[in-house]
Amino acid sequence: MKGPGDGRTMIVDSQFISGELSMADIDIDAVRVRAAADDTESLSQQTMKRLSHSLDTSDEVYGAHYGNGWESPVHLKVCAEKWEEHMVSLARRMGELSQKLRESADGYDRADAEAESRLRAGLNDLGRA
Image 1 (cartoon, rainbow, N blue to C red):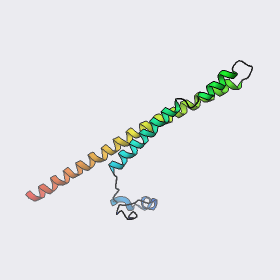
Image 2 (tube, one colour):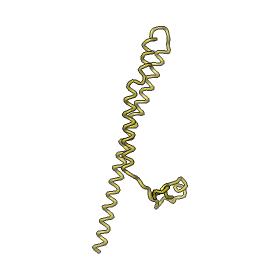
Image 3 (cartoon, rainbow, N blue to C red):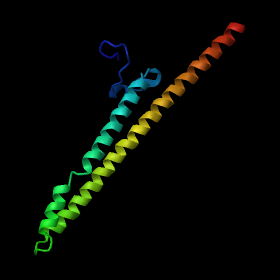
Image 4 (cartoon, rainbow, N blue to C red):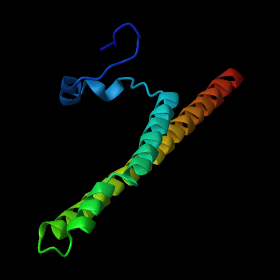
């Protein structure tokens, strides 16, 4: 199925089920994959910066109310630490994703270069026969 106005092949779920994809063309644009990697890395870095002070008010509440007979400041502190750990983990995973996207783009470029090289070699062999 052709994409809207761009001539590229779009894949729909029914094609997977029916087996129509055996000879279908899937267009991967390595430049766009790298751009997605850059965006993901940027978001990861921005998230890490924002996390550095995102829970400061929780620390203030804990400090102001700890030792006054209340149990909630301790629970708030534990909750804030768990939340921060979770968010840092997500930001790191975004950074890892950006690296994997770059590796994928590099792999597509290598595969394309190899296919082109083999095709040229085959055409050269045909020209010599």
